[in-house]
Image (cartoon, rainbow, N blue to C red; front, top):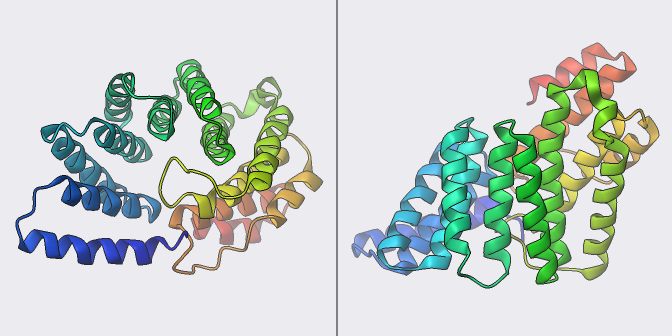
Length: 275
């Protein structure tokens, strides 16, 4: 339901009970992984990385292949967010290799999405595009619009970072076309209703994340009205316990960019201070 902090607290309580029993089962590893997801969504990336890595090792010992793929995918994402691009790529590559023997579904799509993110954060854009293409194909194969939106959102946040790196060549990136692509995914996911997300905790934030990245890309493509319209689709960052920390940071980034474009430098500085 998107209440990450509540889910994390419940997982902690469950884990404490298992720890008292010295439980080393697959169930305990699943709880460790759920704690790592909570840490990831709350931007506690080092804890998320350590938890995902621990879960991956335990799943490997228990020969729980699908669960290991899931844990490796999260490990990669947490490492990438910390700038540890080599570790992120290595974990994601292992996830994709292990996923080769699994049927197309959320685990296989998530593994390739994580590889795309790892390459993207490491500025290896051609390899990132290939990995994201594979992730999208897998999500389409098992037919879940929610998963396709999630892949599209992550792909376009990586594109936004690339746009920051290449501010002098923004026209080459065709940003308006990318906004249209995410918009189509947004509409399909909305029409389909609840679906299977690739990362627990994402359904409540994926549409807001899509609106934010569309607003940012529209702004940089020169469509100020479109940027404002997309920004209006995302709720105000209110710091509530159900709002993922990264989502509030992303909103502050978009609002700072919009204020800077308008020449409202004091307002831009306020938004930057919230990041």
